[in-house]
Image (cartoon, rainbow, N blue to C red; front, side, top):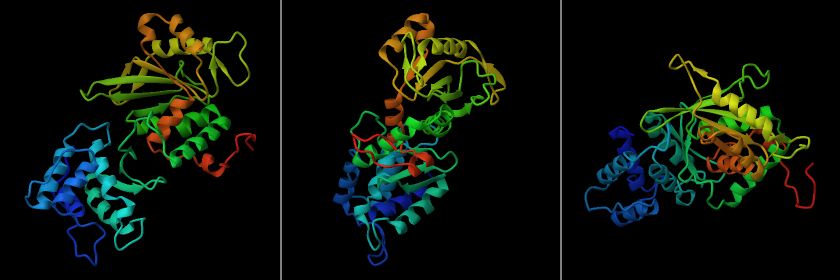
Length: 331
């Protein structure tokens, strides 16, 4: 990724704090504090005594040369730089919302098609304006969650308890996969069941080599089990097996290249749990080549990925949220 030199110099000024003390929104950093700043964002860059603004701009350009985690995203290190720069506790001549600092930063980032914003966790993130894709510095779904993230996770869990399959797809899965770098994410007639061929959604992902992989997705609202008699609200793996075969065997039309293509991988997504027996059953029922093409995602995967990718909760999840005590039923 490449930013214009003018943009890098302006952000460097903000990191250095090269403004009059009475009108600045940014902390002044001398040589040693610049080294400390870049150490805080998990890099080994140390100021070499040269002109601070030029050195920081050169360092930012090196950071921007790191691999992008996906389309519409900046390198994770650069995302950490912005988050450190906009730390609310560093507010000067304004409150911790840092409206003035945010306005200055966005005036520079707009030139590159990005904008910075504060999320509910009070951290600053970068969003690609054209695609609304956000780059969060740490998107590991297995890391410990903060109290704010745990609350958002619980809000989404309560929402999924009452969501229909269409709401699961439209309000949760489509935004999630778009945020994770998949593109041409398309719902295929789930409401009218027209020409699904086992797919609720199809999408594609471009590898760093520019090769493209195609994905189909079959979503079920509740628990996916392998019981002989399935309870109401759950789905049986035998049904999913048939849909997986249809998904892998039928072509989809990609209008961007004007050709019909086969799905490379199939996501089986459940709004509830996917039992071990269900995973084992469908694995045994498919041949070796088809088995390698199946990817399972259950509720915990959805919740964790939604939170770490810092996606806004569905409006219904926010409007209907009440904190429920452990021994009380939801209402």
